[in-house]
Image: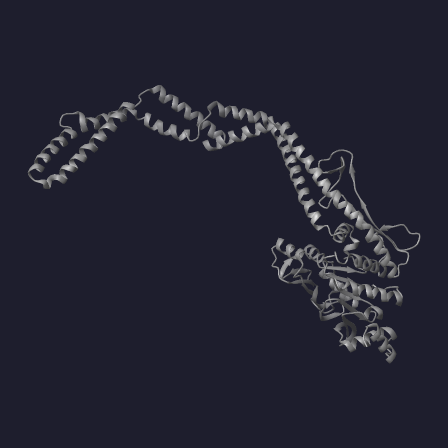
Length: 568
């Protein structure tokens, strides 16, 4: 609901602040006092465009700010989160129009564009009258109104989940077809590249292993020379290290027999002799394996050169070469098995088309059943509101495809065009006079008649409609007192589901208000300005009496006003 409205330097308004209440809020005032200016300012909050002409003379800019209670409005909460705007129970929408041309919009103090303001306005307010912000006059919303009346939210969610799966399959098919086309153009290149790689067929890290081997083989003569020298010095020549250590150990053994304090030195000499034996054995084994074969050396050099050539061609590393090999092999497998995979995917798609078709058919049946109830009730309500010869029809149509377009859903072996809402296209059609053909709702007359039509529709769809605030401008245009009472009663009834703000000249409607506001025009310092204030009970009685009898308020008109207000 709209908690408050602040308007500054807008047309005839210098500054006003209005706090609205729940239920039925009525605005009255003399013709030209500025009631419609307030509605125009509200429409600005809903994303309607405006020019600098509305800026009050002498001011630099106009400001309109509304504070809405959105504590239970999940759609608004989700929209704010999607756009990374802080959410709170009080939503502040602000528009500024400047003479400098910088027209700015804010939502919860975050700068936003006009389209976003319009988007969030569509979730908050429905404004009826001589304005374009009328959701029921937008044909694309008719299916949503019908579905809310039908109470099929859960069925639609289930359908949308399955329809999303169908589209995932279709995207997979499209991607696969695109890949197959791309593969056909590259298949020869892929096979040539794969043959190049397979001709060498390198193993992971083979280049590093060969490089390490070559380092050894290219120094094999020096390795043999040094290992021979080490072996001789340690073990093979006269007075080798091993011989010397053996003599030392023998002496230590004899010393230890005389004085046991040599036992630790003897143990260390024994350990040293064992270590020396181990080193000698390692050198002997290494020396025996040294390869002086030049053919093996050349073979390894050629192998490394082939690997390096692959690396240069295909990414710079052996890892990139092997990754390319895997990728090409996978792509060629797809190409070779395309027809088989395609058939299996189409089988899945056809099955999903039938699942979606079954769910869409169930939803469509429910819509058709309830559409008759809606049409009947709206015609009845139109009569109550003074449109005696009104006719109303909810038209539900489907489109068939002659062939199996895979994006269609299948119902009884027929192919229906579908979207996320199902197979139905819904339109509201109306005729308000005898002999007139039914026409789309968007083409009906403007002004008071369209407001009564909207009121009839809202009365029937009220429980399902999620918009918290409805605004009716000039709803009483061209109606009699008897019909005015009916219109007032419908507004009062509707206000149990929605916050209502309505402009009226009729006492039968004004008398039923929960809150009553009066707009007056005055002249101060040779400037005309409009102002608004909330009336207390006595002021409200007098205002309704003025609507009954004019400026000359009598005791009779005051009593009549109280009667209309259902007060003693």
